[in-house]
Length: 138
Image 1 (spheres, helix red, strand yellow):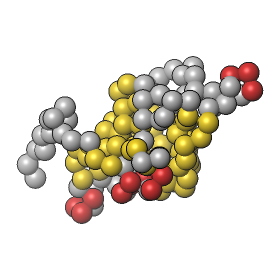
Image 2: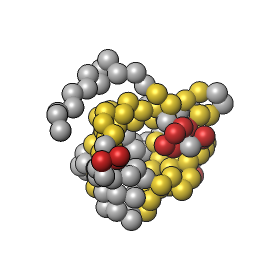
Image 3: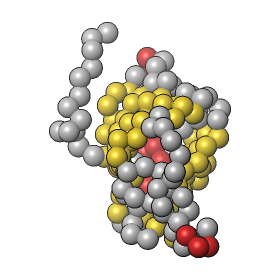
């Protein structure tokens, strides 16, 4: 197979609905968008994309998922937050969710992340846009 080259700066953002479901749109606006970089699932391989999460002001995107294949996650900008919308204080910039691993995230700021799956992408158990909880109530 020949190498795949993608100019991801020039690639168009597409709706996240096909992978994340109808809640990737909130009040008529895309809150999840993708740039699919490669999709080799038809050959028994995986899929790679850059995902952009854009929660509305004062809101969080809450995702609960299950890894259907190994999921490699590399934050490029923004990142995960607490329930109050504050950036998490954890260290590291890489996450591996192995096949079968349930996992979740709160995203309270615009974020872009490179996600590489070794097979099928996550099963999205639920995704919703919720109000951020004030820090003193979290």
